[in-house]
Image 1: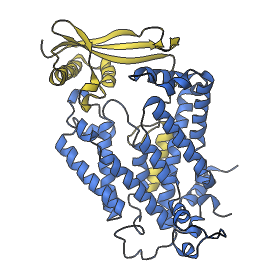
Image 2: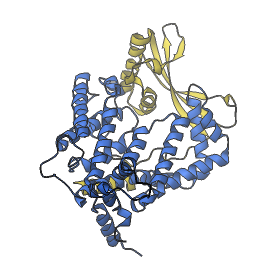
Image 3: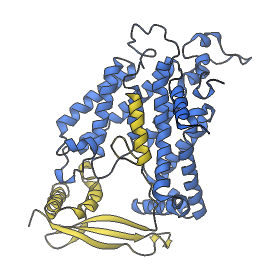
Image 4: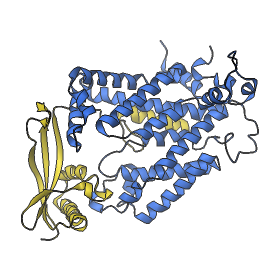
Length: 136
Length: 321
């Protein structure tokens, strides 16, 4: 059994196959460039005020929301609506926010040139998608 | 030049080379302790019953329609904790260690199903596999099998230890290989580390002085990248040169400490796994507790002990010399 396990371990490592917990060990294997892309989840309340969804104040279950938000750009609209409804529900339940709309931005940052305060160029947010919250 | 057949024969010989039962028991105790510590986290209950739209299952977790509920998670966690504690004590290890391992795989599989493959505990989980059904409780156990009255060094004890060492060395080697395969020389030469550190620092609530110290010096970033790749690709050397274990341990611990300080990514379970598996604990125990007399010769009792100095000298890299 151990020999078979070692063989599979080597095959996964050699060919970069992901079969968790077996893995291709690709962490940080793609070279980064000076352009960094991330996701930003913004909620709009009933008065039209926009604010970033403070994920750090939500339960652990929402910890990876930014990653899921990025993946959801390719999802069918119905699944995205369900995702937005969960964020809106969490914002209401844990933060007392009345969310009418959820907006997900793809934020592109140019890491160089920079000063002590960070990159010289401000990050550029582009709306990836938006969906309605449960209150509308 | 050595043929593939000859190379695999030599690797097979090395895998089955003898080790004292204490070496295997030490690895069992260390890995079971790590499993136990990692299983006691509240994170698993925290992510249980996650809303379905946020659930992104990977691997075997696709068998579950949504993130498992709190009751299931708590039950699995309690069984796994009990299994790890009993395995640590050496009680019914062929049942308790697999129970702890299965529970850990399930619970960590949940964390890896939240949008990102999580590697923090992967090496620990994989290093335990060779020990699952090994006779790891023949010594240093609260409940020893009758047949194991006074076990001697043997390939039965050497095989699981060496297989776990292979997994540890392989993890670093394949991490280096993936960097070469996916990025080539640009992983070192393109400023890759600079951009990764700048991006990480910018994402933290306060600018990270350690990350910025490296990122602000392009030459240092290239040196760090080159040293990382060199360490990873050369890691299998420890399998055949036991004298270099301290060097590679220092390298791995430095790497993980730097990653934590600059990027706040905590890979301590992986670093601890490396230490548990690669260090020859019976030899360390000999040196610590059976200190040599002033003339430098080892104490006679140590030589009679199954995990004593004599057995410890049968390091894989020295076989046949």
